[in-house]
Amino acid sequence: MWRGGATTAFVARALRSRLLLDPIHHPVTSLAPISSARTSSSSTSSTAAANTIVEEAAVAAAVSVSQHTGSISDALRHYGKCYRELSKVRLSALVVATSGAGYVLGSGNIVDIAGLCCTCAGTMMVAASANTLNQVFEIKNDAKMKRTMRRPLPSGRISPAHAAMWATSVGVAGTALLAWKANGLAAGLAASNLVLYAFVYTPLKQIHPVNTWVGAIVGAIPPLLGWAAASTELSLNAMILPAALYYWQIPHFMALAYLCRNDYLAGGYRMFSFADPTGKRTAWVSLRNCLYMLPLGLFAYNWGLTSEWFSFEASLLTLGLTIGSLSFVLKPSPKTARRMFYGSLLYLPAFMAGLLLHRLPNEQKAHNLAEKSELDGVLYGADLQDKERATQKRQDRNPSSMQSRPPVAYASVAPFPFLPVPIYDS
Image (tube, rainbow, N blue to C red; front, side):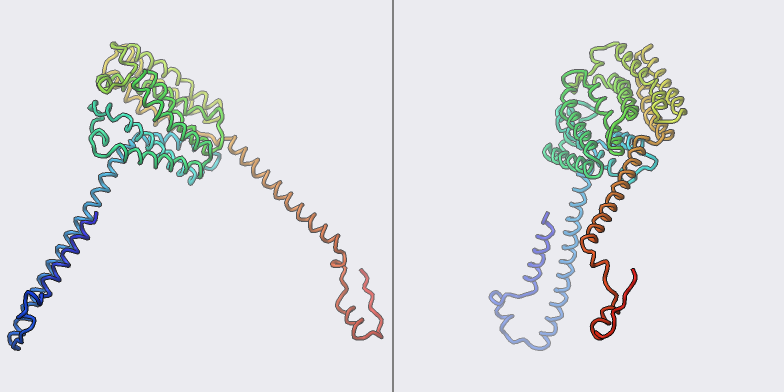
């Protein structure tokens, strides 16, 4: 890190040694008298040599500084890329999108943009921490899979201790931001989801196929987090988007596990599709969870979360995904599994967009705000009444201060005692 400074110091020492002659090694030059012509020619040559040395020193210093700056920029670029890959930016962005959608759905007539940004930022940091810890615990497994062997930890581009420090710092910072700018409920949901993903779901992937359903719970919590950050509480209509995310993840990951079955097997993971060589059971599980999503649009309308148009649109979207899973049931193959997988990728953003487009303001949030405003008004009125009572009590204790005599009365009494004192009618 200090390579540039050492090079500059070395150049400076060389410059001094070449410009200043040593009287011990050059006694004649330092002591003997020299003629004026010889002095003039030697001074000219020494000046030219000094200029050359100065130019060389400047070039060397510039090269060292550029190398030093280049090493810093290379390091920043290297670690920035590692942090992005450890955080799984695209997956974390999906988590942030679901959390932001939950925040908007849980808001009243007006969405707090600053609160929304803080909630998304905190969710992003917590998601990055969870994804990093997942890779820290699965270094050996990722090294065996073609899809993951080029990640920063298996490839040796960053150490596990460095990755763990990164995960800890961003996880604590994200949870603290949610507790500061949102509320304790949102921060608690974020922290619990981090623990559930990193310390329950991650090791369970190598133990039992139930890990897919545990992972679905992890994916369903972020919209609850957003709703809690906006409304400070959870209600029944807050469960629409989490339920959709939970049921959506099952066919999505069943198709992915079927397509990457050999890769998961090489990595040592226990997936549901391993015990299903024909793919029939995997396809049926996918179809069943697609059917569970069919009434969600109707529930959203009946519970006052969206307008009636969303129930129609959500039913059409779910019907399309169900047809894809049905084709996977009728003919289990990589082609039909891939078709269902791509259909699931289109389904989720369309479903969330419909929710946000047709959403109705959270009546409970508006009611709570109205009650809070009314309570603040009552408290303010009570404070005014208390101040008036205190002022009245002070006046009752000191009646003389309220019945002071006019200045003319004092003037009549003091300087002219022979005049009668004026009487003032109250």
